[in-house]
Length: 105
Image 1 (cartoon, rainbow, N blue to C red):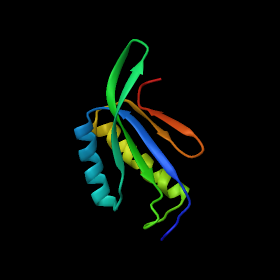
Image 2: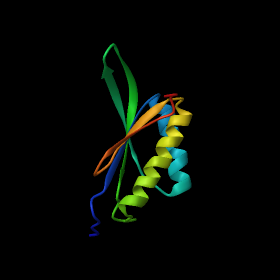
Image 3: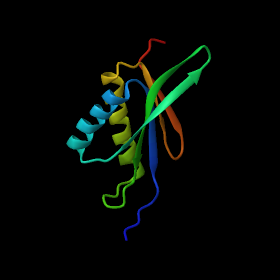
């Protein structure tokens, strides 16, 4: 048995799940990483759209620290934003939630 501190990040982004899975496959292959990809439906004032929730954990077999895992989550989320042609995403971490947007202010 191996134990590591619990650290979890989730990326929330709209877009096609099949494309998101491909982006994650390529990213994980290059980085040596494992993520979860789940379908999500976003319901908001005046509409709804489909997207994904991508999960990253501090996997005890290859433990890391909070800052390094956050950096990986940000890199993956940025790749997803570009490849899914989205303008924004959120990353939910153990201490805070970040919303990143490339929309003009």
